[in-house]
Length: 172
Image 1 (cartoon, rainbow, N blue to C red):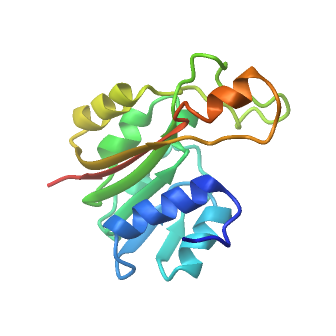
Image 2 (image 1 turned 60 degrees about the horizontal axis):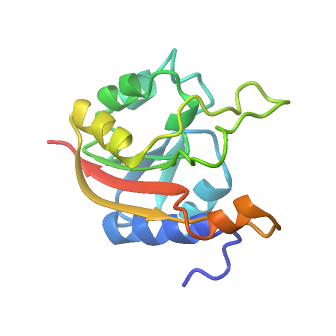
Image 3 (image 1 turned 90 degrees about the vertical axis):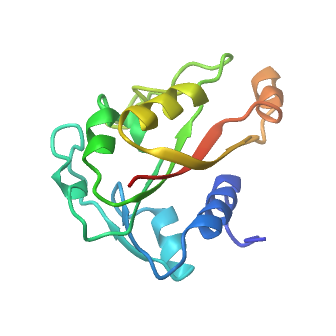
């Protein structure tokens, strides 16, 4: 299934998306154009990306009824206040993924790009609670591992420890 996509998380995310969202729905994908938004378009989805604005400061882009679905794949961990964005979303469907907190690894922090850092790495119950507090009802969820081709204790642990958490949620 989806063998031509290079990353396991692309395969898992696309399969989950296809389970819940028909290609006829319009999608606002949080974040600038990226390899996975290209994958969604190749699969027939109508995708519009945000333009790179700081969503902690300016989340007006989600305060529109112009889209059926908002997708946010590995976005919320970069925000200081994901609550504000989640609360402001006007679409009635959300498909989001976040990296899970790993007990054996520190939160990701790029040494060269100050924007490419994780302020949050969630436990599943924390993300569930955040969604609940912002008015979302989780309809489906999935955790999956993301093994790396390296040698060591941490790479071995990544074969067994879920790294990503995908959620499909709705709001009335």
